[in-house]
Amino acid sequence: MHSLASTSQGKRRYNLTWESVQEEVLSRISSGQWRHGELIPTESELAKELGCARATVNRALSNLAQSGLLDRRRKVGTRVVQHNPLPGRLMRHVLRHQIEGEGKQYTYLVDQVSMAPVPGDLAKTMMLNPDDELLRCNAIFLADGQPYCCEERWISPEVVPELDESTLRRISAAEWMVSNVPISHANFAFSSTGAEADFVARTLQVSPGDPVLMVERVAWKNTLAVTAARQYFPSHHRFSAQL
Image (cartoon, rainbow, N blue to C red):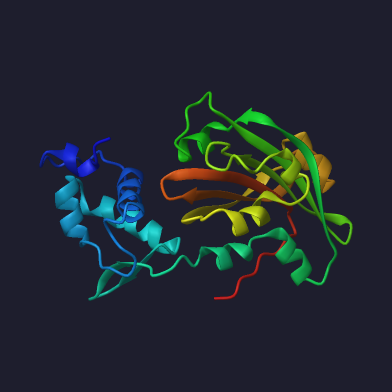
């Protein structure tokens, strides 16, 4: 497989996406070409090498910096982080940690596990073919016996074949992955939506179409998409974080 650099042939490719540049950066890190703790080439140098706009490189590097894989400092440059800080950061998003942190009793239930295609927008983000099927798990999370969250999750059996139905019925996918999968980076999106799916309305005990909060997450192992999840919370749910 040729790298972006080997196929650019010195021609500027303004149609090159930031996702493609990000994949190239991750490939160089995972292969050891760019070692942990080392400075990587500047935005201008990468743009010239890959034959794309500097803004495209900037977005790719900024996204990886937000994920904790790169450290960017003015007048210093961009450096590959010495260690992966994600496990501790991801633990904050494990629902057991959140619920028990509020002093409430945590309950995890599995509604359904099956092989299923991924919704179109998520499939595109995960760079999947439209007909690809992943392991899908619908799960319910309770706090003191009351609905806290319901989750639709898709897991790549090629990347994590050991995460099967029996494991998912014992422990949530997110909690298992924090300890067993070297997640390199993750993307998060927050939005307000309607409880259109029967699973969401039934689990959160709301009427179809009622507003709910949705958190969409995609986690990666370098260039491989490991899992995608859509978590739904009641509209009154409050998120908090410590910086």
